[in-house]
Length: 226
Image (cartoon, rainbow, N blue to C red; front, side, top):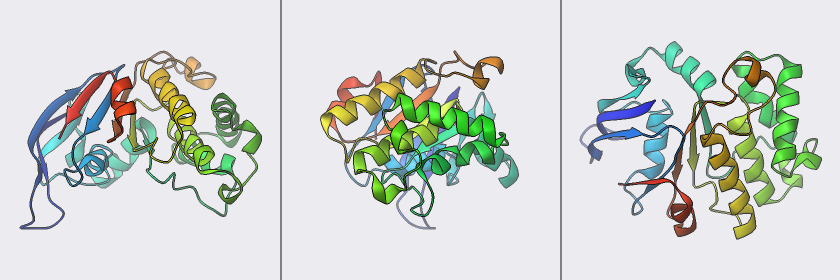
């Protein structure tokens, strides 16, 4: 479903290239931990895979299609419909409610507001933060904010989920809950409502977690070391 061929990336011309021509096929239905020392490009790889950065060399393929070289409009459409992203610091808008932050990707993907809000509330309940739906990020804890960020990544039932250190600010209990949610998403579990009628409710997802946490690595199905 998701793979890279001969992938390298540099932030500017003449700078050191990351990944060294990486070729790898990620396994649908599995959680892959992306590991390596600081500076090896774990987070950068997620941004390249998420089509927010363009490779210097090589390509990103989704279902065999080279999406990394597609026009901007196509890349944006792929991001909206097929990729969910969990940012390292949750990146929730402080001026909006938790629920509004969760449903934003679904609205961008063209969902109706009612459908998006229903799915958002369902996910928040599953992650144990349903009671915080109408709060703002400044009114919830860091652990709760990260669980909200996972809900936002899952709201459109994307086929690819990219998580950048999603447990970095969590205690062990919260980290376990987040990993369980991502693992369930990888296996196609926990996708309900409209997604079932769309025929994608039980489709395996490709889940990547950039991490240096041994706890996460221990619970991953596969490990890619940079």
